[in-house]
Image (cartoon, rainbow, N blue to C red; front, side, top):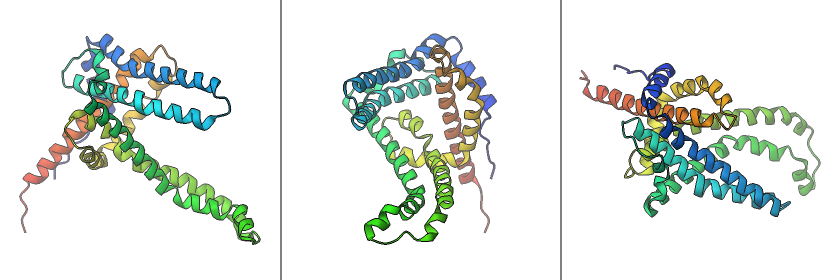
Length: 268
C-alpha cells in the first residue's frame, strides 16, 4: 500500500507563513485573546487567594472552574478560528468567542474539555496504578494499622517505586498523546459526535504523532521567547496556526491512505 507521508515541520512552518501573510494583526489578536483570558483567570484567583488565606483546596477549585468554564471555550474558539483560517476563511478576531454564542455550542465546548480531562485522568491513573500499589505497600502506617511489624523487604521497594513512577508518567504521556488531534476534530464540525472525534484522533495519531512531536520540538526556541508577555502577539498565532495546519495535513493524509487501501485489488 502506498504510504503518503506527513509533511515535515519545515513544510508546516512555510504553510503557516503563507496562511498568515497579510493577516498578521487579526491573527495576532485572535491568538493573544486566550492568553489575556488566562491572565484574567490568574488575577481573579490571586485576589481570592488574598481573601481566602490558608484555603488552598478552595482556591484550586476556583482556578479549575474558571479554566474549564471560561478559558477552555475561548481556547477552543481560537483553535476553530485558526482551523478556518487555514481553509481560507478570514473571520473577525471576535469569532474566538464563538462557543459563547449559544447554549448548544457552549455545552459542546464544556463536554469537549471534560472529555479530555476524563481521558487524561484515567490514562495517568491506570498507568500509575502499579506505583500507587507499591507506595501503599511500602508505607509504614499500613503495618501499624494492621498491628504488624514492617517487613525487611519493604526497604528494597524504594527503587522499584521510583522506577514505576517514571515508567507510569511516560506511559501516561504516550496514552494521552493519542488525543492530541481531538480539539481540532471537535471544532472542525459542530455536528460530529465527540466520541467519534476521539476515535478518529486515536486512529489518525498512530501515524502522525511522531511528526507532531518533531514539530513541537522545532518550536522550542520560539516557545522560550514566549515566556515573556509581549511576544505572545507574534508567537501565539504561529503556534495555533501550526497546530491547525498539522492537524489538517494529518487528517487528509489518513483519509488518502485509507482510500488507497480500499482501492487495492486483492488476489487470493
